[in-house]
Image (cartoon, rainbow, N blue to C red; front, top):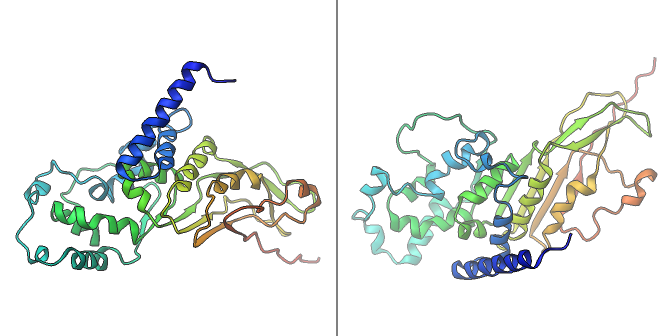
Amino acid sequence: MPLTTTELKLKAQNAARIETRAKSIGIPSALLAALEKSKPNRSIPQEIFSPLFKTSQTVYKSLSNLVNPPSASLAWKAHEHGVPTGLFRLPLEIREQIYGLVIGQKTVLKIPENYHKLQPSRGRSNNGPTSLLQTCRQIYAEASLNIYTQNTFHFQNHDDFLAFAHAVNPVFLSRITCLTFDLNSILRVDGDPYQHQCPRFTVHWVDGVEPQWSHVWDIIAAMDNLIELKVFLQDPGFPKWERMQCLCLPEREILAPLRKVKRRLRIFEVDVPWVDTSSWVSLKSSQPVMEGAMFNLTRRGISPLPRIRA
């Protein structure tokens, strides 16, 4: 249905607002637009962006002091104006090298799925090397960018990535260079196996996930500094069979959002749990899936088991 004149006007005003803000903070307007598009609505429940929701606990517990320093806390106020230290007598270039050695050692910052349940605070959290950022505001201002440019962020849930993307400063989000995903949260297996070349199951989206999966890739596609991206989809699970096990699933639909990444990255690898169906006559019309894709696809499948003759 065509947009009305009022809707078109509002859309143009919103685009202009996003463009102006993006220029003012020095990030791609496409990234701000993707974040705006993925705000909570019917397809993305408000709860996943709440610190009280279990799938975003890691963002708000293990990274809370990193992405949004608690300026109102007594611990932070004690260092608000810094403390006497010889570090600041060194040139900024030397300090930046020191920061890089401390917090930018290609560390994999894992964001585990469904982190902690709510519990009372036990004082300031210790984030390992990132605790350096809690010492004073000047160090935070000078060193915080190293976290995003020199480390890998590892996610086990698409909701956690969305919560993280909306929790951090978009300037920092745009500076991330390496992402990895190890996901078991987007697919489910349904139905009984049936005979057609080999036993297989039908795979569906987990309820309500399909639009969120698309939003994830809108954001990733707009992260201009990204150079390494690895995606590993876990086997959603199904019973064992004596013969080759295959999954009959809409591969094109699952991988379509990944094609939003239009530029070639240094590493862009996708590993999926189903077998290569490109030789199946019944699915020839849906091939080739990889034409024009910027990622390398590995269909690891299931190793066929030898049949036991009676």
